[in-house]
Length: 139
Image (cartoon, rainbow, N blue to C red):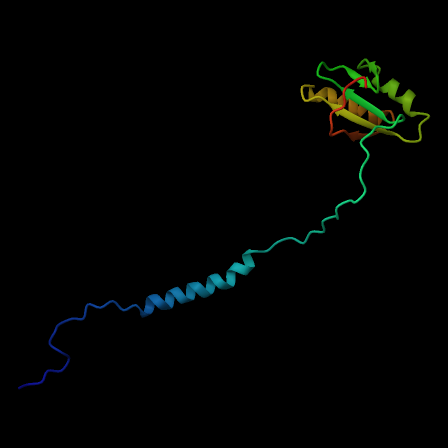
């Protein structure tokens, strides 16, 4: 009987998984370190919810300017031509202490006309406040 060194079965075909495990662990550590850095945000100060209820009823001294679907300009219950808007607003706003003009425009109105009317309010010395709820012209 003779003894052989190194075995007689031939080459070993098993896969060496040690380098694969080393690479996976290194990648895991890299992702664990980078994940908190990627999740950065911004500090915001959000205002608290208002407790007072806003009144939706218009008072008698409020000035509401409306451009309806047809392009007609209304100042409260009166219609005004395009050319006379600034003069009418100056006449109304001059004696007033409160210079706020609430503005509402229909979606079908040309953008240029809406800007022209807002410019007329500013030129007459008023401040423009946009109305978000629909108000019927003449009411």
